[in-house]
Length: 287
Figure 1 (spheres, rainbow, N blue to C red):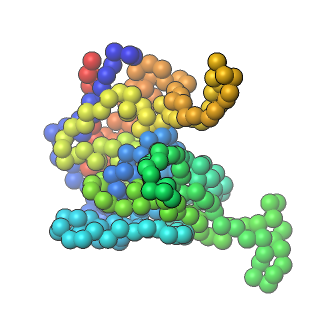
Figure 2 (figure 1 turned 45 degrees about the vertical axis):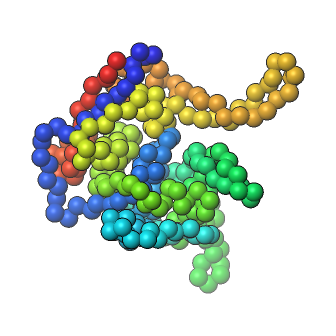
């Protein structure tokens, strides 16, 4: 595996794909597309709905960027986004899974650089959405308590808070953006297909994507940062630091190919045949 330097994903297959007339394209900041880490399909679903919610803002930013006008940046100061549950395409009996995905997303940390109170640049890890979950109530309209097993019921929407320090980088179109089909990210067999849809869509116009193999593994969460306590052998003092770890079961390139790349490629090709997706990819390792 150590000799495999790059994974070359080439979405341009020479096949013209026309999607359905009612296809819903979304645009999102490139920083969000290339955010490193493992995200489940439901977590991606939540992010996509946030992007859909912010679409008018993002389209306005894109138009300003393309016309050379002054870019309107949003600071997301104390912003809370509310999204109706029926937007997620999840059955009510599976709302608990959606709620768990929201909680995992609220703990999903991304690397970013920011200025402290003294104006110095600081490297850190923070969550983009520090608090997310399905809103619930334990009282009926008349003030009496619900007699549910868990004492509460959902109220029909998810609340997602936005980190005002990190969000401007990941939720503003400062320079580049990705245009992708919303429905192509939903209900996929392979858990990595939604992210691959975004990656490949980002390089569709260019026609190819060269990426270092380890960098690809970081993008999809096979290599990830974890905070660990390190003890100095000489002083005996301990300190916390971020250490890169490797997800078990994907040590060989053949594992990544069999469990991630091939299933995603095949599923994207099937979506093209059904006119759900507008491109797919072929690839070859470069040694």
